[in-house]
Amino acid sequence: MRGVRPIRSLLAAAVALVGLAIVPAAAQAHGSPVGHHPPTGVRACSQSSDPLQASCTAWVRTDLPPLASVPPKQQPPGLSPLDLRRAYNLFGQHGRGRTVAINVAYHKPSLESDLAVYRRQFHLPPCTTASGCLRVVNQRGGSTLPTTVVPEWSFEESIDVDMVSAACPDCHILVVEDDSAFPPDLFAGVDQAVAQGAKFVSNSWTLPEASFEGSFDFHFSNNPGVAFTFSSGDTGGQTQYPAASPYVTAVGGTTLTRAHNRRGFVESAWNGTGCGCSLFEPKPAFQHDTICPNNRTIADVSAVADIATGPAVYDTDPTPFGATGWVIAGGTSVATPLVAGMYALAGNPAPGTFPNSYPYARPQDFFDITTGSAGAFSARPGYDAPTGIGTPDGVAGLRDPWHEWHGTAGSGS
Image (cartoon, rainbow, N blue to C red; front, side):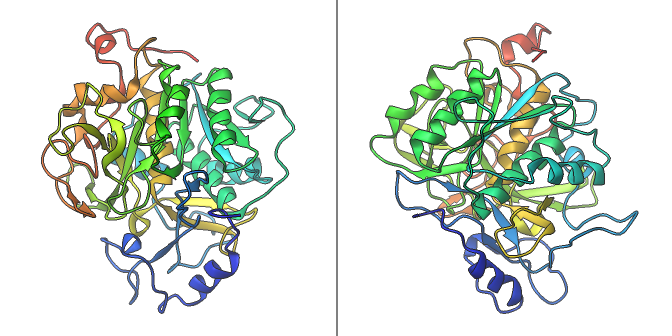
């Protein structure tokens, strides 16, 4: 199966050859090295060149061995939910009663138990199927889940639920497991998430741009009032769909490094992030940049994605690299569910609006990323392709500006 074949042996070899592994430029670190080896990572999903076969956008760090368990009173390596909430100024936000949907291919058998370990480790409230906090359905809305387990997509699912938990600990999580990574199934999952009532739908998968991609845009344009977040891809300055759609929030990636400043962190554009000018989609009315005068510019916003500075994730069944436990994750797979959780913290989108336009009305509520580059595109003051408007400084910039001005930001399911 092109684009999603299991790659346990390849990735296991990468783990074993820690110091010798040769990785793409997109995986090289901007942060401080660990020991004598610079942080390195591998792509969990092989990059598809077929517009009818999707790729997940997960990366895993390979210079640190996975941990099966963490000793008492210690933390796994990687950013914690507390780190992420501090970095993006999410304190005082709760999201109680709101549901973030995750749309993903195939099945992860240990989803609930792995999520329980992650949330317990970081003192987050439990989120279980018994309580109704966690729900898992198939692309038709039923409880009979796919039987196919693909390691890389299982790992993707772990990243997604952990990052939504980190950003919005009180949110409910709906996981839609699709039959395959082919567009008809993935777009059926998008529609099912909306049918289940989710106002925030995270999608950490990409397709190569193709001339017929606009025929899929109705899945988003027909659902105003829903925040769709999509990975911009991990293609180092190349564009991907559905992030190219003018109706979704394209989420780029950054390198998030600890610093001795008020925020506690500094950020730069991650050189692996997908970005640039869409090949086929027109420029939406809310974009006024000169980078792409006539076509859609990607990305809209961004968050941490570099495996050198990525978050801790817990995954046991199965891992795509032949090991289990705690690892450091990366890719725009990390950034996308984080931003979806932040949208949920901001409140329900206003009916009839497209939430991907909200950040453009409130650039002052984002950290402006001005260093780093991806491919031919560089970060700079103001809007830029790799990081968009920037990374959220709180959640006001993800809230409908008309409602914000009138003090009536959405709340509820």
